[in-house]
Length: 356
Image 1 (cartoon, rainbow, N blue to C red):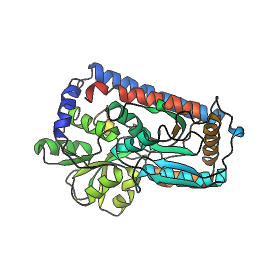
Image 2: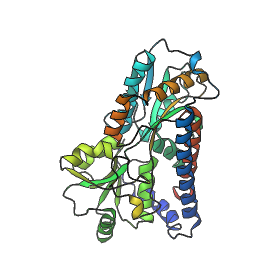
Image 3: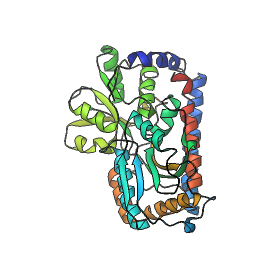
């Protein structure tokens, strides 16, 4: 994607969001209410999935068995967290289903390119799209696409991200979100924030500038993998990355995390600071999701979901998810996946008027 300055594009967004800056604003209240509803619904869905371990009510998992290669098209570049989780899933699906599962990256426009290309793809159960909920819902609310999760057959939410983290070089003169915000105010337009247009990171930048008062120079640097490269190369000063993407660079002293954007710290990183401690509205809980083209055989959807549920119970899956996502395994059945996506969409849509 061609890099471009987004300060002008965000100006309208900032003005609209500024109206929600005080706690009594309708937009802020709606967002907070939606966030609470989403969190409650997600917890309830997870509990329901654990208790019942059901698959889609409309499909029969036992009525479909794959006999040829399954293709998974990943919405983001190789090297990022969405790609990693898609390949981890594919590897385990091969063992569970007994067929080859191939992952291909079709990146661009925060996942919109892949979704647009394959949402109406083959419906025989051998074509799937691996993405994340921030891209799926964010692209719709920002107007990058004119469709949402209901343009697909949702198969499964199959994991919780390690959390978007605001990440800076290790030698940066700020150690938490507040000190970063203060630095941008002292040096307006000088600190370069790398984002990806559309999705959670774009919305994050709007919240930082309106509700946090930040004065960044906002630059489109593409998805997580390319933003990481830009940060390491000095093209930008700060960006938002999944902790799992930045972890090795944090551990070897090249980068540092200022905070997580999750509503609460990851299970295995309980001491992480959260952005909501500084800006209460800044909460983005990103999950990994597998989709199928609209009209895909319901039995195939149910069978693949059942396979993912089985995979999530294995020691291999738990170890991989603990190590990479710093979370415990989290897989929803089809019905709960649909409900979860609806609730997350409602949350993102509560910001629609602010992102024009």
